[in-house]
Length: 216
Image 1 (spheres, rainbow, N blue to C red):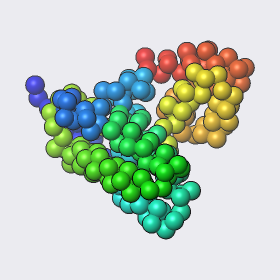
Image 2: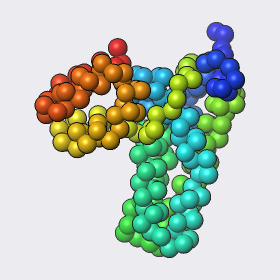
Image 3: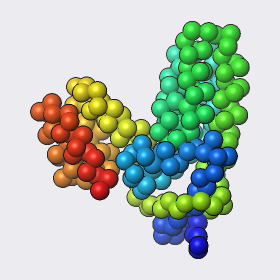
């Protein structure tokens, strides 16, 4: 099978990245799971990978710096945000280690350094794999189209909306109001309008149905 690789978005048209689905790579990032989490939207997932690599260019350094400065509140917030972002892209080991670090920051300060060290190792592997994707040298497997469209502002935004709808949480109203511009890029005007109307009517099941239509 012929394969094509990712090329810089500003210089060349969208191309295909080959993302290996073997056990070794799934242990770093389970990309099939990441795509499933956003209802099969491979285009959105590709943008999430790019955004994650951009947002976490310095890996665990900001968390380590916050801990070294004694700012447990900032370190906890950074670990919590990383936990969500890693889970969304399917980086399960990194997600779990971020959970462990978050808990250590909150309840067990002596365990913080060991938890941070473990997280740093997984973080390096995740960033290395994403660098391979960006450089067009990712291991072979299945093709994922890398688009030219702008990155969404929050890589966990869509998943957060789904979570709130499943929980029938009225906070979905606030999320739609605060992140309407980003959701419009993801869903389009017509679908966003249907989701918004259902949420405003507190018809969360209807909103979920309208939201899932985006994967068709």
